[in-house]
Length: 51
Image 1 (cartoon, rainbow, N blue to C red):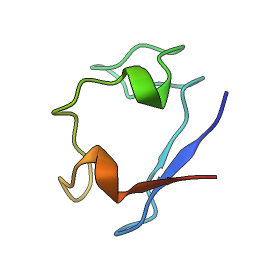
Image 2 (cartoon, rainbow, N blue to C red):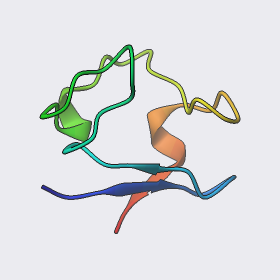
Image 3 (cartoon, rainbow, N blue to C red):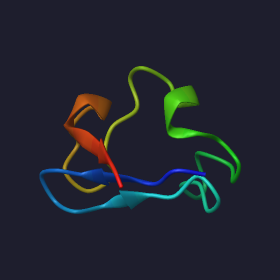
């Protein structure tokens, strides 16, 4: 699965890990809710880039 990096802080969303405890492993970035935010800087999905 493809990982995505926050352009503001460098946080990496890894779908194989998820985002405990809210997003379970196996959820692709594209399938995250539209209102999902970076857990560090609270920016939207548009601030993420494919790695």
